Length: 426
Image (tube, rainbow, N blue to C red):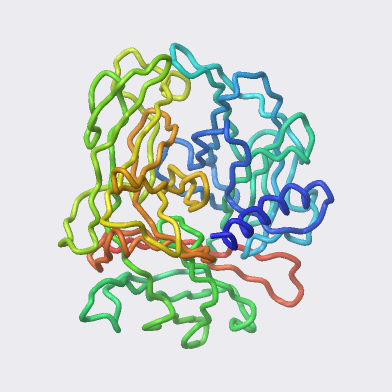
């Protein structure tokens, strides 16, 4: 665990220090202040979407977060272009942005009629002050007091060109007929009129499962090249653990117990939700049901709530996972969008010797949530749900494919194609 903590600390430290020294460095989705909650980015009007736009598309990405510090803050933001591996690109902001490179976050509102006082901040991209000239990976950096050393949030998003054709499918892994726990993603990239001289060198692909980066596949090369057709038809290199359907709970009201909520209590001055005790599912049969692939929505079922952004309250949510004994050699974490897809200290469960269970309390805004339990071996940066949740090839998952192009003369990675595959859609 010490190695893992050191790596996490190093990444956070390097982001803050690197930004102040104007160095090129690696960016990740991260919240650096404990009073910042509910950070989300998606296509405006579609809360369950991934933060991807097409270049010059008449649409926007909405980024929002809450500040629970109960203090007035002056937040600013800038946008950084990155390569396919989220290292800062060697091009200037004046090239890939039109408008101002630094802007205040001036869209904010105070919470109303809530036990927790907070301020909701929102940023729309692109906007009148910032527009994008290049495709690729981008990071939104939010900082305080117009001081770039006071980084608060970094959030990844994508601008795609869509100039290649992508076809593919998800199916039960070819080399996994007996256990049936893995999914294979085969795909073909056709460049059409877009000429690529050296596809083995100039084309990079990134394959992600449900928007996760920790288990993303990033080193695939075309298995076959037939003219302008690049085939990625492997039987091992493009395989993911399928996992299980995400668990869920309904936290949309403090007046009654939602689904999978055992009790709702008010311990002055705040509400507490105790979830039903969960069970290990690794030895249970697969059961199909509809969920949100690890995401959450901010909403309320209380009639008096008109604006969920400012009128949904925060509650302490208590998770419990009983086990016969403590799992040695790693940590157990609550995992999903509700913890930023990060298995770190903030999502790590504590073993209770008196109850023989892992426990964790999270402060969450009213809404509908997906989650799962993962095991993180000591020194690993990859969260593994299979040991606790099980893994079944029938599980419904989204897979995002990003196709990047950068030839010998290019100074940045262009995102020339993007496609979502779903394991249930053929």
